[in-house]
Image (cartoon, rainbow, N blue to C red; front, side):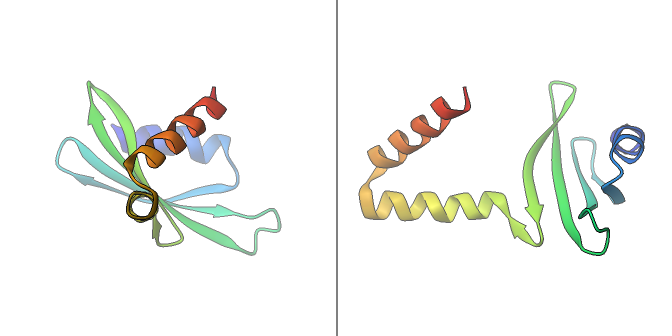
Length: 102
């Protein structure tokens, strides 16, 4: 189960990440709310990992960092590029980012 995997992996190996809660939404969707502590341990950042089970494996499909949804952020960014510069520019931009990752 995802809950057991997260508790075992992240709380034992990463002292800067504290799992707060794990919610399941049926058999294929789950979210993990965690706090990432800065080096001085006074400030913390809330992170929510959203998972979907695909082909028997849990995959992250979204990330919420300090209440900012990454999917929504990218959708707004992509809409702006398409509106101002066209779909071809968006495609070229994404291809360039993908090449940098390799």
